[in-house]
Length: 312
Length: 298
Image 1 (cartoon, each protein chain N blue to C red):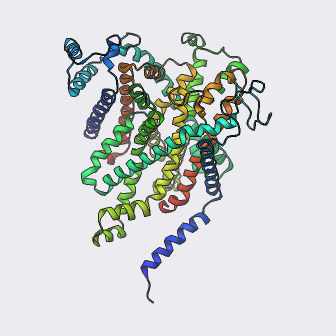
Image 2 (image 1 turned 60 degrees about the vertical axis):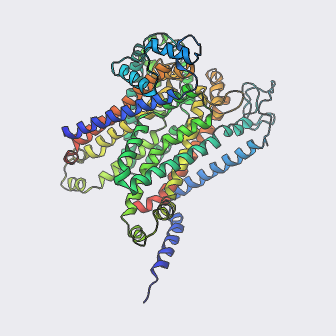
Image 3 (image 1 turned 120 degrees about the vertical axis):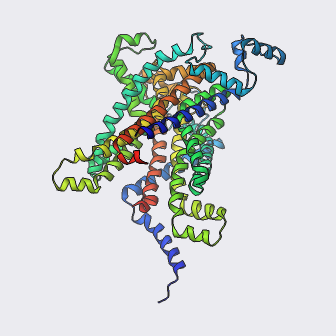
């Protein structure tokens, strides 16, 4: 088991290195000079530029610049935000925690909705309730998240009057968990992947339910749940969390925009507006790390549950 | 009795394609019919918009009829908060995603097929490389990558859709790869190899055209659904089409403030359009999948 996982760890590291190169190259090829913004908007000519680079200790070749940047990143130094002048790490950390809360919460909501519908429609595929559930899931997946968000805000602020429409970030503190619940539910239902998740879970559950060992368990009156939960639920769920992580992170950008949620999504949006290169680079890398981490955790679960996997 | 095997095989495949529709469940047929209707409406609206055959001027403001509901004063779907005809703007909004979406789908299918065939047909040489490339792209959340590209290049929607096409390619590549690996073991491909057919003919004719076209068609419909969602999301975020040029995303966004005051329609009409379209493409893909592919998997 350890050898399989250490191999997986090497793959993860190789992929993250590749991601960092892609991120660097995109910004390296960008028109305009990222350093011009740092130097007060002045576009430097050749000789001046070389002198400035030398004074700052920046290599001239692209791979030299990449190596310098990645060396800093590995030490946890993502540079200084061009917008706020703060170290990027500090900005990323506080907003990252808020996005973490949002994404983890939304995954729980997604699974709480998807698992019962999938299980029910796997066991009774042609029943009216299963069909209604599936149709509802499809409708939710097709609705634009941002419109759904505004409808939620309208319903809870105007109709129920639970809190005023919030704009500033510090106001959200007062209303606490109730206000935090709305974006979590929205991201859980409206990240666009719900229908795919339900379909995948349903197929896995109905496949496992027709396996011979489940039939044997049923025949001798043993608990089907105890025999099948690993293959029918644990693996598909961890697979979904790993595979849908990118969608959840992408959806978080929209949801945070609707709710003025001060997380990474808004930071990324602002950075794209301002062309704040250090920030957008850091957010992209962090997102990739989270995605790879999810994938690694899934592999761990897979190897732990499936003894054959560690013999290969 | 002599049997002409070749002819038999042909009749069987012809027969099974016809019978696939006949033996399809009512639900699958309804899905396909609904999906095709949506495709037809979108294509016709796109042509109408391209030639400016519109019921009203998309930017003309009728200050007497603002935020009207459907069927008022000759405005079939009502007017928005500036008295502009919503139906006209919905039709014109299709311009924002249709061609870029088609471009994205073509790139995704082309690149996906290429990678899938490479890693499935010549596994020893290309599998590791393609898997690495696919995992690399999958590591970057699509919207985050797009924000990065937007920050770097300030691109137009076509460039963004190229990025979208590239990020969709790995999914298609893995599906094609699975198909190629399965087909490679089958007798007819082995016979084709033994007959000395060139890899090009085997791959393009016997693998991609005869055996992957259903899969690619299904992925194309799903790709269009995602293209609509991506374009509307970016327009909503303010990185796509800008007011006053309509896009379904910026129409929802522009109407949002009025929605919070209780005037739902200007924001909800484009939201419904998005939902019906995305649903149509998804159900078309699902129905086709059950009808054309499900039979083989069973």
